[in-house]
Image (cartoon, rainbow, N blue to C red; front, side):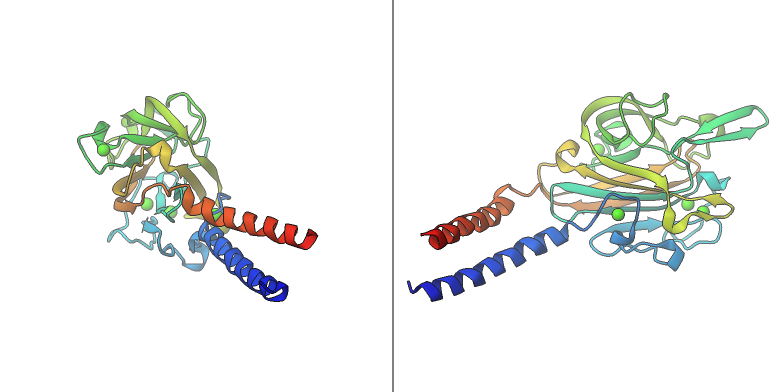
Length: 277
Ligand SMILES: [Ca+2]
Ligand SMILES: [Ca+2]
Ligand SMILES: [Ca+2]
Ligand SMILES: [Ca+2]
């Protein structure tokens, strides 16, 4: 082939391949940094609804907004779970975000019989959408606190077949049947950021917090497409948000990533040899 034409067609195909690779990278849109701008969410500017393909539910006590049809009173602002999000962008992970008012170290609630240490509930997943598998149907959980009453491990650890308990039944509103894992079989680890929510640092006289996480589908036993139920709550179960029938996709096969990357590398080396030769 004429050298000049060869070079021209090579440059064109390289440009196309780089564009394909870049658009694939752009789809990996969620950065685990405690900022939900990448979800299209910012309550300070009234943006509670996440951009597609994310699912959302929100219910902010006392003044709304709410997507649940009512505004639930959690007793104290610290127990308000404000929003829950989940997304699948057809890569090897599932992405979750929670907006809540419970600090990462929990909150000491005092009443007539003393102090009660409240914490965030662990994220609960009914990955097979079968209420008969897993306690209360939720056969997977993601550990979200270091509280010693919960299952041993580090924040982000994923557990299969956890024993779910309500940690503060003595002050519970019983909006959910359970809150935290006390045991289980570890299957993997999620990236988790749980911190003060910079974009919406408080409401109703108390701070707001954000939990953003990225969980390998392999740790959740994903073997194909499916639907899941997800629950976020607090240890007294005074508030709960659930997303039902979230549709997730199978783990992408290696060749969908490897073939374009390999083609770019091959072309690069052919081009270099031709230039040198
Ligand atoms: Ca983010
Ligand atoms: Ca609130
Ligand atoms: Ca709420
Ligand atoms: Ca189940």
